[in-house]
Length: 337
Image (tube, rainbow, N blue to C red; front, side, top):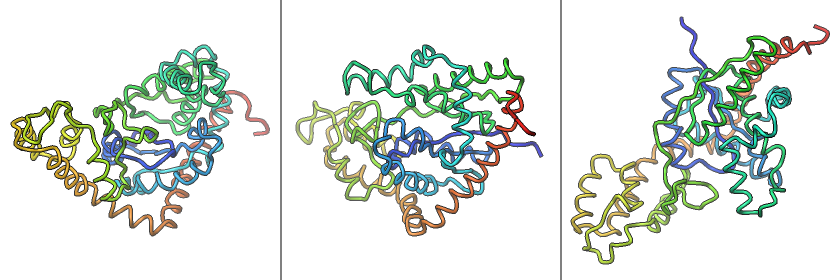
């Protein structure tokens, strides 16, 4: 049998996953696990780059993210779910790769530049809160990818510069030490980023504009009732445009063929915003019901989740150890062997 190609993906455990994660990556991961040998990283070390002063938050969310994965259909018999900090080879590889990348190159990385700019806007322009660990994020990510010989890395467009930097590191390493590391290919997400309830281009944990996979019916209803609608619609029977309304935007995700009727009535002024929101609440809750049923199962069987994480981490450790052996041999630091 032809050996499956390897794919690496994952998330930082800084909070529960939301519908942006589901449509942006989780759905696709469930499909990809049928075609690839899939490693899914819970990146707790990288979460600490800007949560170093709140380790309890990161620790708690490792389990929550794992439960979200399993609830959405990630199969531990097909995908290896593992915890980043439990693979010491990743920190070691990060150290070796750091010699191959200049500070100037890290500062030019578009993703890092954008995030540093955002930090300065929030905390001031001196940049003193940008840590060595944060600046070195692309190097850490390169270690994650290459430790498991990933052939493919699925990302959104905003993350593409990080993978390009990984490719540069691989080429530099292989040119110096021999053909050891696998250069990954980028798999760009076909799904554009899901917008927030407030119309923000990004649905984010820190922005308070997300519907989480674990949200109760009451919480989903509260959030949708406060969602941004067409501001030109004043009265119930005024015509409106679903294209400038976040409720209309989410109907496209959750309402299937029913959206055609909803949009037609909205444009003709035959459907008020409250009725439209109530219909969306019903559709979102029905859509998420199977996921939340599984979630309740795993929440009441946390020992099973721990066992899955331990098994996935053991598999990841074995693969990373084999890669490290090749790296050390190539770098001539395999002493006493």
